[in-house]
Amino acid sequence: MKTNRILITGGCGHIGSYLLRNILSKEITAVDNLLTQRYTSLFNLPNKIKFIESDIDELTVDDLYGHDVVLHFAAITDAAGSFGNKKEIEDTNIIKTKVLIDKCIEAGVKKFIFPSSTSVYGVAANEVYEDNSTFLNPQSPYAESKLEIENYLKESNIDYVIFRFGTIFGFSEGMRFHTAVNKFCYQSSLKLPLTIWRENYNQVRPYLGLRDCYHSIMMAIDGKLPKGIYNVVSENKKLSDIVDIVRKHNPNIKIDFVDTPLLNQYSYNVNYEKIYNLGFRKMDRLKQGIPKILNTLYNLNG
Image (cartoon, rainbow, N blue to C red; front, side):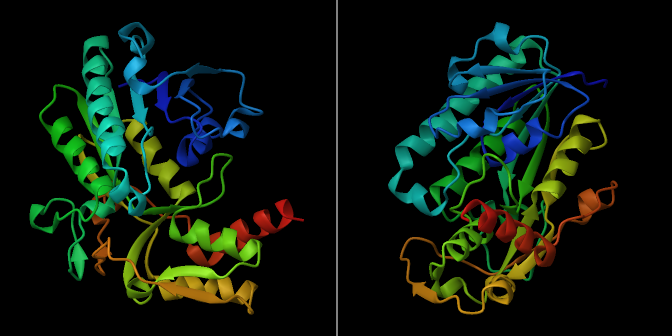
């Protein structure tokens, strides 16, 4: 399938703003409701990008018509915060997303690319695979919403690629700071203590750099990935390993351990052989990625 026109929802977000500056060979339409006020994501964009300020359920069939691929990154993404925000999670991540998928089908969109999350696993296992449903045990309303849309796409009449992304790290114009690596870098740049959930400190989690995220998406856009679900991970690492990397650049950083009754967090490795066997190759490493984020934030903070 030759892909020329792409529509990206959540275009001002962490991943979306990175894609706008790196998918240079396609005609791009970016959609964002600007509720997060990340206006800098729209600065210095390539000339061929069209911007629509809209909520996803307000997009019309005409807005979607003529696009080959829709990348759906508009979502509420704070897993921990989703416990106190269940109604908004259901409204945005589930109801409005289903409306968007149905309109894409009506408009004749050829492929729908959906960023799910490795948080849909939430099981105590040495290694989890995307094609074994016994591993699925979402531990938050956010993770539950991702799994529900996965199932909705499976039952739909649209070609799709679902990515179960690890926790994203890396700098972009729409960068968010509630995820582990980016949050620690932000706190370190302001000389604040690192706030860490006590039970998570020695648990293994999957992480994904923005470059690797981008390359997996381009594989889907270019037709190199068959319809299906793919784990995408740069590294499986302990949280303590991430703290050690930050400490190399800020040896005096303090740690504030906090307890959370909300998340029953498990330790697990995410297997990514499926996409690797189709040609995906990792470029991002936490050991190099964290210093880059820190240096950028140190410069911004003077």
